[in-house]
Image (cartoon, rainbow, N blue to C red; front, side, top):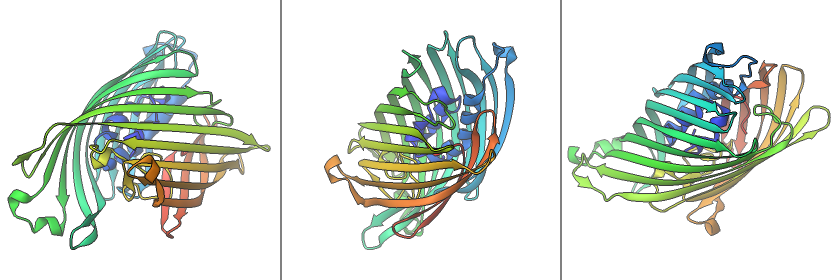
Length: 393
């Protein structure tokens, strides 16, 4: 379910489902990716609603089935449903739920709500998620070398978020989330161990995140000018129990910081040049599924989300967007990034570079909402296909 514990990239101001994605994202890479894929349709649609009528009864109901692909959890279908409404002087609010199922057996559910009120000054949201996620984690084992360990991760979580808009461009928010996740390893190497050594990883994770965001974009879905910068500072506590509770680790605490900056500029008659840079850092005690990495926290295309997990990572993306007609568009993009144990150790050896092309099909002329298909190739010659709703950034 999107890496992005930074699958927090879709903030509450952009839709009711963002917070649910945050909650699952805190649980793990597989869960984060699935949540992003499952809840993004509701996120995009909720943010697009603008109605001259106000109040709960003046809202509208939406239903959005969206197919997608992901290199970690495979291809699948998302079904999102929601009820959207607008309070006087405020941005859209709504209630919604999402269901997702993929080709590798991953299943996820999300239920959330967000209300923007007091003439747009305050935002209050809450969400709950549940899912079973299957994915392969590349690890290096003694005597065996690099192996793909098959993981099954069950996730249950929820949380609340409160945000305040100081100006139309600047907002701050705090998010408190709780996630209980059980990770089981399904591998021939692991299965050969005695029963009492079968590693069940049961984690209860609490996260408090403070977000600052500055946004001057002229449009949420298809910006042609402006910038958006964000800083997310997270404090987390976790308790681990392994080997069927026969060994208890001490409580651990860690920090995670993610800084992002994107910019947009019109080029020619209908072209747009867009760029994004992301810097991520975590403490040494952060679990593997709440760390950094190219393709994991930044949405960079051409990188497997789980292949470059590191304590620190940095990446840059640039993209040219154009239109062939009112319905059909295209993109050309290039990404570069790396990771390491510290900022000074960041290297493209733990990442690399990639590039590719994509097409866009305009689903809504009114809200400039596209269905996207991208294909990327990295410096190792690996290819990746991406299907999703909206722009990559």
